[in-house]
Image (cartoon, rainbow, N blue to C red; front, side, top):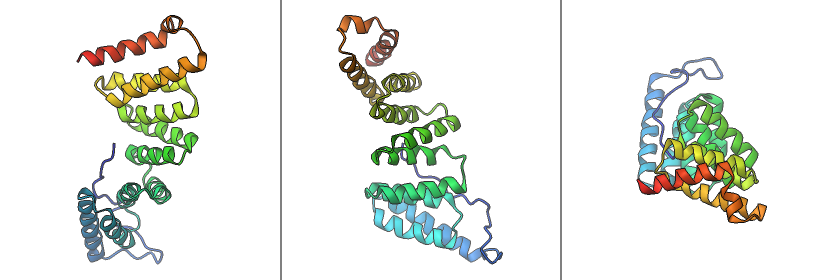
Length: 209
């Protein structure tokens, strides 16, 4: 799911508090720091990435991708609060990018803020309804919250989009196990339930491919 976002500015020339446009050299410097920061991220040098992306943000504070990519770097360092803060800032600056919501959802799951995580994944899926990993993340959050039927529905949808998605298949089977344990029902009775029958068909057809 993790992906770096290309450099964008909203708007292209941002106004400072004194209502003076940033000079062109500052814009160029910001992009240079941004590009070097994303390159460092790709090399797994997250400290250097954070340093350069922070400089890019200082020079161009309204570039949402710089916050987003710095958030990814923070998350790789297990600095979840900082990551959530940067993903939130990216969303405030540009609210129509599904990746921003997906990644904040991921971080919120780590924080066990499941209600907020589910809300973020739902918004991301509204923007990108064919993203299998989004259904997986929302399904994980729902399973952890105890919403097993909805978690099953999300795992089935992820497998419909990508039948070879191993993590979705694993979520499906784990959720089914949790449901069976919770209901304390016999295996034969559980097989009669439509969602199990449909889910099992997805799993087994995926295994054959």
